[in-house]
Image (cartoon, rainbow, N blue to C red; front, side):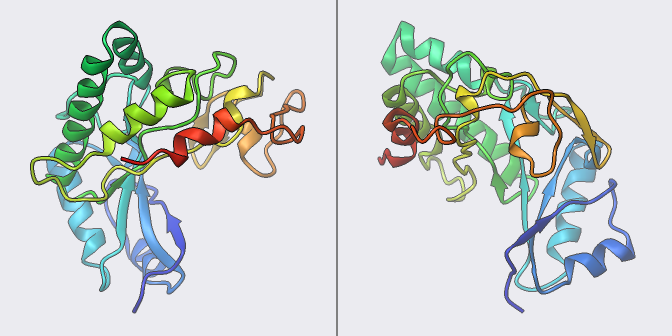
Length: 229
């Protein structure tokens, strides 16, 4: 059975018969884990192994392990710095900033791979315009050329870390939206203000606008995802 296009989540810290039934559906290709699925490193290893054992080829197991305020696994893991801190290091010394990005990316990948996790949706390659809480410290920098350099360094393969673990995360257009949105609860987890605009059907206190919605997507917004090693 080949992997499908859908990525699903789990409600708890163990796999139920109902979970297995869902994961065996031919349209499912992966599972994304959240803080609610994590107890400690031992439990995580067992959970990931259980997910991989459900079918062949094994489902992809993913997580948002960006660092800063978006780090789903914390106990027993290194506390990773927010991307903005890496950008500040670049401003002080570009060479040191690039090296820091490379080391943080390696550390994130090495720890997750040690527990069997396949993908981390990091780093975010949107730009830090300083006007939207959904991005905030999750972005490296406001300059696209700096974001490109740091993102490439972050995902550089080193020291035998399995290729493909870091995945560039793009929250298109959100960085330039300045409206304040109402937080809401989705599947038991609170979604932060500013994220609602990216979720179909979510209500907001006022309609946010982005460059894309105004027909003016900036080349600066696109540049980081066009950067290559």
